[in-house]
Length: 484
Image 1 (cartoon, rainbow, N blue to C red):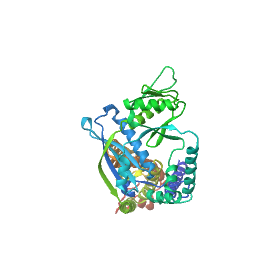
Image 2 (cartoon, rainbow, N blue to C red; image 1 turned 180 degrees about the vertical axis):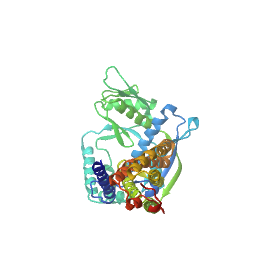
Image 3 (tube, one colour; image 1 turned 90 degrees about the vertical axis):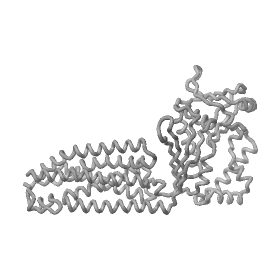
Image 4 (cartoon, one colour; image 1 turned 90 degrees about the horizontal axis):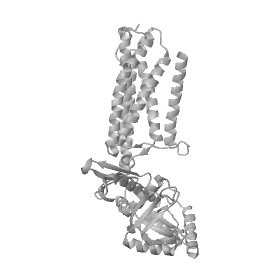
């Protein structure tokens, strides 16, 4: 049994070292395949946070969740289109029942121009129908201009240049007319038909079609305009763009004069529902009002991060010293187990990945305390068994068995609390709850499996003074122990 236990302990130590190495390399070596730096939240990396309140008074209560989800996706696409690095856009509900308020929280790491971000987000989602552009000189000119500008952009470092500076640079080199031409769509051109003419879109199931189709209905003004467009462009594509992104491009099969069109194709039910949601969002957007803004400078975020890391390291050092002094050999095993615990949790944060905020780091540090508490419970039970006259091996077996129920119950209650915080809390509270839950679950593994395996692998059976000293604790000397 000792050989098998020692082999397992060796595997755990090697595994812990490999996980720790992965955490180090993935954070420091940008050229490594494992490079995966921590995702830092707004309060640690700096940036802007905008909180919007959504007007859902005109939306059926059963459709509010879907409408907010669609709005979140559109806003996320929009801020991504402006080159914002990993924006966080979350929809949340405050309150319940008729008094519930729905908010959209937009976090833009690294962006401190709140006014520009506000203008970008507050625009009504644009829905536009574009007709297929015919082949000819105009299409060729657009294609040539796009290639010329694109080739030039690949030769310069545009990532460190603002949009205004880059536009001025392009206008100076190519002229404003060619730059504007390069921004046109070579395949489609405007038809003048926008989301304001769309009354509603629905998912339809017809007997003659295999899958679902999309039904469109227009208002009075839209009926006339759509009839004119379809009459003049039979057998051409009519592309549908939401916020500049094409979401569908059906072919016009015949003139549509009654204001009721159908988009047929090989849609799945999910695809059809998503398309209808996007179309209705463009036609009937959820109105949002800016409720609050917050800007955190990169310097302040860096200070907060360094303070959090520093406090965590100092805390770990003091915990390690206490465990070594008070529990001696078991304390050393606990320090090794705790190191493996930290490496595993940090690697999970990278792989999920978890966005680390100051609140999330606090949850992680608290989980370290819980992991230490589990070891303290085990070692105190072990000391009780030793005082009752049992040998080391039996004392360890009974100590772990007696401590397990307390560790299990306390950790389960903490996990349940974390789930409640994550489910009902705001974004910051969710980060705290998630990190705490991850830490507690991993701590159960390290305290019960890693610590126990490492202790069992030592294989103490004798009654020497040295063994007595190793398993004594605090100010207790070997002479005061009743180890037998």
